[in-house]
Image 1: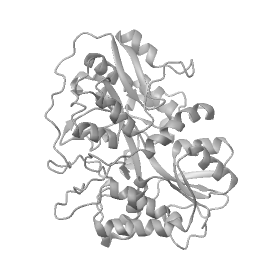
Image 2: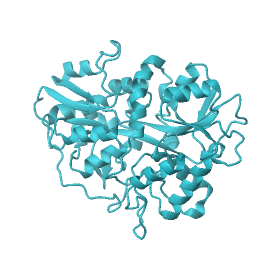
Image 3: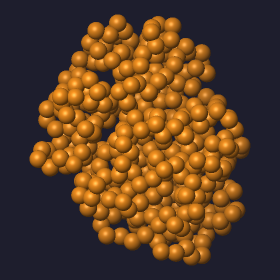
Image 4: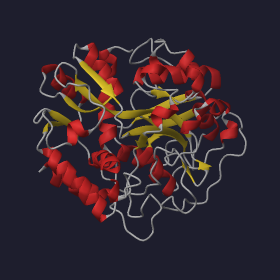
Length: 407
């Protein structure tokens, strides 16, 4: 596992990333089935754009927008560099731009100055809907063949069977608890949602409107009469049930977190004893001496996955395609997944991580594990579960409700 100081530099931006789920233009939600949406259920019809048909000569450069830790060139740490080898092998100079939020990423891509982007689920779908990115011809990306099948042609990186990028990696939102306080070891989100939880005042929850989906996942399992089929597709009744549950939880919550360092400190001090987290944060907490463990609860969980995409009007499309192929190549993908703290997308990467247990820790090869994860997707008024007889709550309404929930 990477060192905590290096992790700190990465996660400061990751926290901003996760909080930036925005309200416009989305695709169908991704569920435990992992299935791509059926035609007509995507929530929008993308502009008719063509993928690159064949590769030509390298243009000499590629301009990319990315999250921190995704395009390391040795400037942050001389030992961490997968950009320089790419430049030497491809003849494409990488000009990179860090994005702090999904909104910033979308706006940067709309300028037309960038060729490729590492987009989160909400950003990727807005970029597709707006015609900012084009379909990707995966036959021109040899390493795509080795990407885990569980990440291919999914609702956050494709529309109606058309691929719009290559998967970068993935992770789940987990339940973390203090092992010396919370006993027996929990296997359910009930420890953070049940009004009778014995840990009142020491529960922590993720500070973002998208957390409403976590409540919906719990309700899917515990109140099947609500008929929730997708935690990002909530009608009036379903949405109100999720909001009511979170208002009830508000009485249990001691602190909402968005800054990973505060969550680590809270679990170390005992101010927090149970709540939602990421595997990489749990690793840091353990490294700092906190007595914690994590699990993917029996009800399932929310999660995330990012996608490398190519601009519809890329000035350097050949170098962009070369970059997409490189970043999911076994060695480079192993490096970035280990540095960032996530499961790699390339199945061959697990043999190349410095920590031989990295892929086990992040469940990279465990499709059954990820079948229980609902990947973040921005809610829209068109119900993402395929219903056409009702209107679902869009992200703007989720945002308003989250302000009300927190009080």
